[in-house]
Length: 340
Image (cartoon, rainbow, N blue to C red; front, side):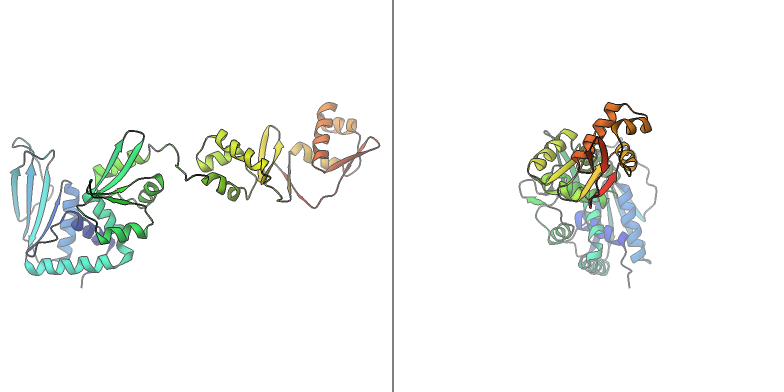
């Protein structure tokens, strides 16, 4: 009984991508990364413990090209392929019983959804590539002559939006949401060159491309606590001016309100029963437990009369204080007064 593992599932993905699925007499795997050849070889060694008849065929771009293999195989042959830009390798293990057993393993792994991500990781290492172009076009491609049911199922299971291009003979995946899903799953980790290319391209994204009105529809959800336009700009990865424009629109529609603290505006949903004041205004409110003249507040806080008067008038507009016979009085309120 072969134990099904994540590493084995990655090798299943590798073989589905670049193995000979039609062969009835041998297990074959082709790749230009010797790391992947070694990975596949070690997994087959675990499955077929007593078999050591592995053959490795190395194809070099020219006769002058030299390469040292870090591990040895029972049969090693070297050839020249003038069409190749870099060396590539073909690993073979012959035996009808072996290929039948391997295909049963592939079938079992492919039927188990918990291995889907690892199959895709292996498949991408074999047939995946990154395409960039004009107008910041960034595309993840998975080469294939025609659609494969297993790849469709895997992409749908992780909710990746894709299309299959018969002309390009590839799955075509765009959009940063899809890129982020692949990044979170470390989809390119197995192939060193593709992995570097993936992260270089992913890190070039400047901002999310949201669907129309996405921010307008979701900004209220972020206002569970008072926030500034700068904080919201960081959340949505947009310029502060863009966020301010949306907030002003929502304010005109009566859906948000703002409180000015010093030189900063804090935004909350309209009707949230909250008032935001500065620490200076909170000091004045504390003094008004007993009615005071403006001049008294000015002296006790060590600020000029005009500054004290301006803060009192701002508190009056908020309905927190009232002036009677030259004295300022604190007004009780059921609203939550938050000090920032």
